[in-house]
Length: 220
Image (tube, rainbow, N blue to C red; front, side, top):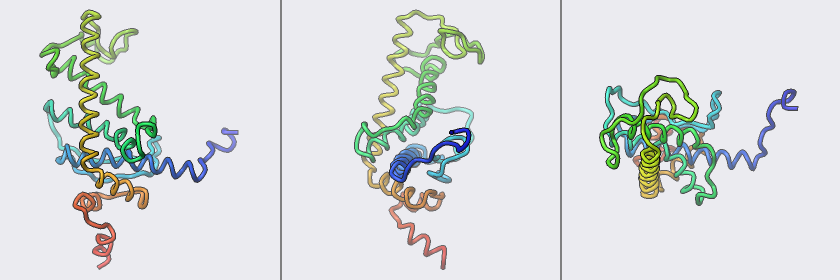
């Protein structure tokens, strides 16, 4: 049947729930970007599904850099995890979260692991490189592209440090979203109503201005 008719569309109730979930998720990414990475200006936030399978997106253009400081990388990880935290805050608890953050979590985990094993950015494990770089090859039972040259005890310490740093980024995202719950709600509600928020509209929302007022100014 799917080959003949395609995927079935969700009913109205399911569509409304998915729309609300996506709005919360993208609002979380956009708000944390504005709070933690102000140099990466938000260009557009959308809950219109893309051809690549994403339910929505938050588009920001970061400045070109050769190097990234440790704190900046941690801020990027908090932004990546903000979608999941926004779902929980806006929808009423972790029972309401979705699997929509899977790619965000994967990217954050991978970056934090690199911070620890390649870039010497762990307070606990120090300025040490763990593993030998083997390019892009995948070895069964080994880290992606890296040949493990350390003990099981060190591997356990790395995993423990990854979790600690991930937990800190989660906590930072949740703290900032909680402190700015009014803005999170405003952006999410606006996305549900308009589907797309442009750069100037997002800036107006961050300043507490009405988009109706902005629309009137455009008409004049």
